[in-house]
Length: 451
Image (tube, rainbow, N blue to C red; front, side, top):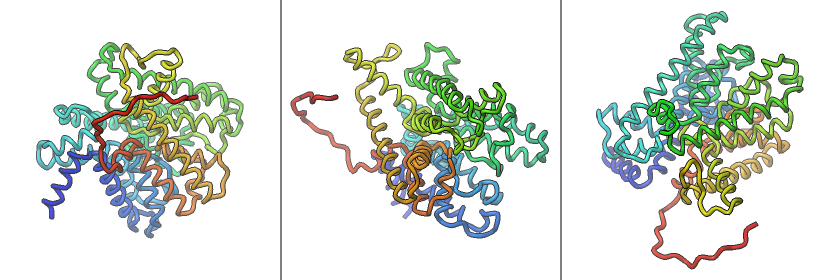
């Protein structure tokens, strides 16, 4: 039995790592769903309904942050620990965790383990998987410990006991770096909406986590020498900076006089809230204001930022900033009449452009179909449904309160959307593909009229 299972995993890892990722992700979610359904996981000691347990498990493992029950009041200490573990497992990546387990058991990675880890970390070279795996884990733990060490004293100064302060600091640090957006306080971050000691570490954690390990490792190795950065790192940092600055300006401009959000604050606090919102809308999921109080224009801007997401191979969701960059560069090249799509002295492969187009189309299709389904289920208006759908697909976790009000079938729809958004549209498509087609011939080329 065990030998057959091992052979099956070997074949799957070698032939279709993407399909293996899909299966393992689903299995881990089912395990956490079962654990969260236990009476010991709820503060009342009662069994949590399946749709609520599944939604929470998917949201945690997919590092989304959408909730249908209060994390602070519904779940017991045991339940909150389960959620934290699920966030960490989902943030590192299921396949990365599987490789770590294999490394711990066998003391070395075989070909199967390297193939699994390679898929989990999006690295192209099999020989450097082991060293990259250690760097990913040590970097993650180090950053989370630093963030927790910074925030814990502040929680203690605000009146919490040492144990409670450390727990909250650890929870927030893991949730921030993994872009999860779960909060252990019943009123979220509202009590700390002007506290830089809490807000700055959260923004730093979310920002660094959204860059992705490929970028983080390049920055660590190059010591911030720009000439040593690869194209992926340059595009990720450039587009991330543009979205961060542009998002802050637009969010602040539309909310500047909104008395329900930041309209009555001083200038410094308005700027702080604008920057915080821009950082969080692309995957962090933490919020300082009631999202239902936002202006309609701000909601549209938030929708766009959420759909864009963060860096590839990061804990952030969305279509990813490099996808956005490649699409934009292709448009610029077409407008100029250039035969090649270029950036930073490099030509972008045509295959990369096809993947970028596929990601955008598949993502938009998932959002459109899910929106139509939820509109039919809830009879709500388009604005709140679209916001919640994009938040789920992009694994952001911002909510205007619709998720918790959904009927069970609506929660299942959002759960499936979070799963698809975290696994990735390309990984999902590759995993569901029956076979790869290798054609030995090409038809004559002809250009249809476009536009």
